[in-house]
Image 1 (spheres, rainbow, N blue to C red):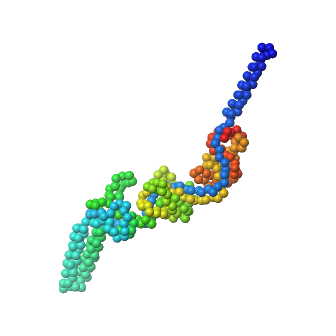
Image 2 (tube, one colour):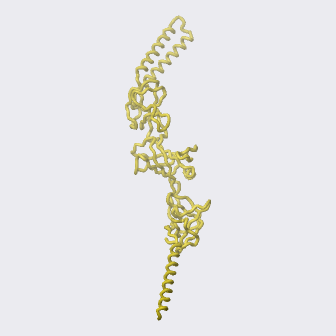
Length: 344
């Protein structure tokens, strides 16, 4: 072979190699790399998650019997108390004075009624009024000892103009109080409830009697089981401006000391679907009102319309369009095209 022919042959071989490499590189570049998952059949437990707060289903409030000074406090905030247990005492001196004054006025009224005109209706009325005043003063004096109306957890009153502002009043010895002011609240352990704010998009699936698991920030790692007891019909506005409905959950507290105001999350089991065909939630693409997935078959992507059912945080039920064992893409979905080659 002449030198010219040898050079020509080498050039042809080099060109062939370059063209082949270019074709291989361009072919590889046209392929889209995706992660995949296989559609499987399993039981799908659908759960609605909502934030909430511990609240008193029913509670007994102990108020100041009259205006005066709260002389002493015999319990601590959050203490367990028995029915009739002493919570605190009012300053009895003004109450004693009021009782003595009422008794003196009653004695004077009786003295007037024993005069020459015993049938005078005005005097009889004055006597009756004075007797009532004595009864009221004596009752107020007896109420100077503030006692628990029922067994439960005692909570001190705290009044402020708005959440986050320093309280204007808290239950403490020496505090000046007015008649009827709440001083203590006694909450029965059996009356505590968890009020969960369920988003309006999820409330349709929540029903009375469904099981729930509540995790409180005060007891990390210790879930409490419970049942949905009631759904309140009035909507509430969430901190983010959304609409929610209060779902009342009765908890089994066990030996835990739960207090009103504790915050946490509730997982409400709304549905359990046996033999559900499921795929990861990220595999389903919303296209207006329709849904589709990218089915991978022999390294080729195909856009498949599907109908879906309920979802959890990780899985979505597919009711039509797929079969068990089908492989779907879960990443890089926006880069896929019908019939496009993929690397999985």
